[in-house]
Structure formats: structure tokens, C-alpha cells
Amino acid sequence: MPTATDLLLAPDYDLAFTDAGDLAVGASDAQHLALLQLTNQGEWRQAPLVGIGLQRYLAAPYGPVQAAALQREFTIQLTRDGYQVLTLDLADLSAARLNAVRP
Image (tube, rainbow, N blue to C red; front, side, top):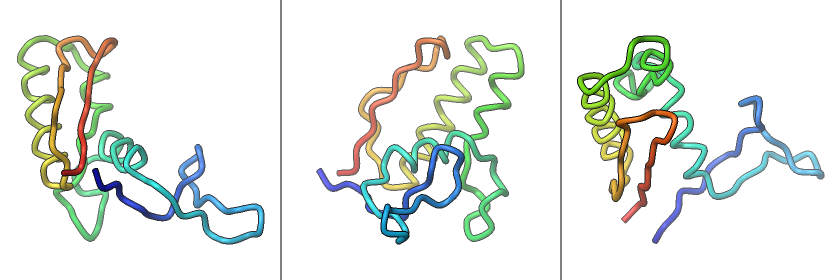
């Protein structure tokens, strides 16, 4: 399965650098998934429809209707980014399951 390669970010979401002072480059699928979850639509200037805005769901009452909406949003966003969703269970966010790969 192909993996995305991109500039890597540090844990604080700033650019990561190698020990030699160069920009760090590497497998970035986990980073892509995290950024999709954390950002809201409109925050990516070059692609204003990108972003799930998970924080909105965490700060509001969460039930079956919200779980279905979030699951739909995850599926749309991941598919748009080139992932194939294998497993997605968001009924309970404290035990959420996501398995997505690039075909």
C-alpha cells in the first residue's frame, strides 16, 4: 500500500527538522489524518472544504444523530484525500475506531 510522503511536523505542529538542520521528510499518513480531524473547513486556504472540525463534536452533546453526521464527514473527507475507509466506528468517541489506507 502506498503511503504519503511529505514535510513532517513536530508535536506542536511546527515544522520538524533533522539533526543536520534540514526539513524533516517522511511518511505522513498519520499526520494527514490528524490534521483533517483537528482543522475546520475554511482553515486551508488552498482547499476550503477540507477539515472535519472534531472539536465541534467534542464540545457539544453527542448522540446517534451526531455520530452519524461525524461518520459521514469522516468518510467524505478521507475519500477526498485519497483514503479508502476500512473501519469507522464513531458511536462512542472515547472508543472510536478508524482504519483507512491509501489504495
